[in-house]
Length: 248
Image (cartoon, rainbow, N blue to C red):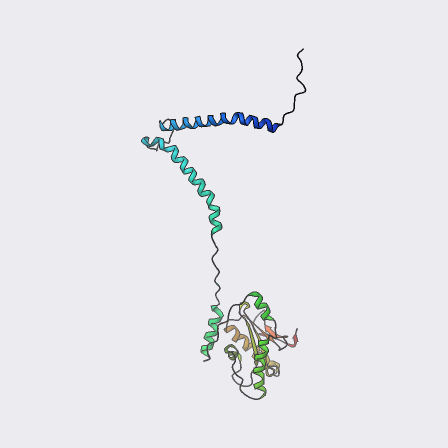
């Protein structure tokens, strides 16, 4: 009975793989080089098959040409994703000509000086501007009401304000606050308007709504000096809705 060789000394698989690769890789490399040299020789001699449409005198150039074409195609495919990332999106252009043109034409019809075009504001600025009782509105209101109490002519502080003022009698508009981006015009009436009968108030409010729509505003709101809602455009149909008791 032959002598057993067990136990066999342990040998790491990684060490075995490394020794096998060190022994076999040179042989594999030599085999690949010989194979490539054989293909090069056969191609030079015209022994490799080519399509029938390829000219017979250019047979050795077919396979090098195909290899070059394949390499160029791979380069183009790899560059396509990076070319899409390098392009920048075109800047958006905002046009504010609609309401400004209507305001200019209305001012020219009334024979008044051309108003200064409204500047587009950011949404954050519009939210801040929508709050009633801004300092500028109070200043315009005080400047418009004081001459009325003294029986003097009301100074025309703004062309848009002048368009909505009554041509005869006391001034009915204390201040205006246009929100062009929202298509909204906020109007603060004077004490003279609040003293009118309800039927005259309704007629004057409807007239203001028609004038504001002609100037490019879809909605009209009447607010008191304290910012309370006195009336607004009807959501269905036409005309204005007025409240006897101001809404907060």
